[in-house]
Length: 201
Image 1 (cartoon, rainbow, N blue to C red):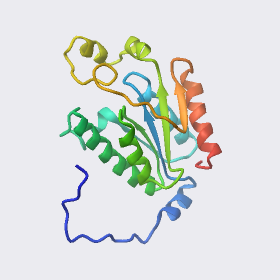
Image 2: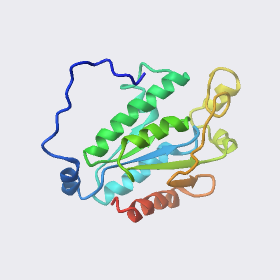
Image 3: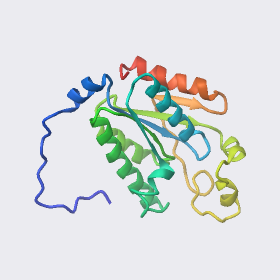
Image 4: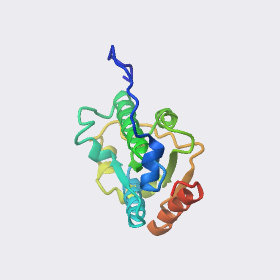
């Protein structure tokens, strides 16, 4: 799906580059990629991290899985091919934000390791921070904030990640947060601590 159908196009170099934008914002543009099962706490954690950064004068933006499917990706379903295209588009958008010097927090199940790696390869070294929101599926099902596991177990939803569709956990994420063990405040602190130690903020 990523094959270009455009011909006769030329890349135009911008007058203002990423370094200049980062200097203006006093931060490094990057993508904090939260991945994990439905109900693991990705969206909650992404928004809390963005809020903490905002309170410390950092420009952030959150790209959330459900929100994106209301607009940019509303023509995509949940087949393996559509999931791949969903993450490809998000990766391109996130890369543009990072190039603008913004700290992006994304919250997507993004079940396939290869798709996440493709996004990583779009960014400069150190610009993609994979956060594995590790939570046992039993706990995710207990939470089931959207009632999706119940629908998947009853057969109402087909191809649901963790039930009848695979989830490939990260092998070497920059950060792992077990939300069944860590509270929200400590989880946020762990992510912020990494950004500080990496010199991104």
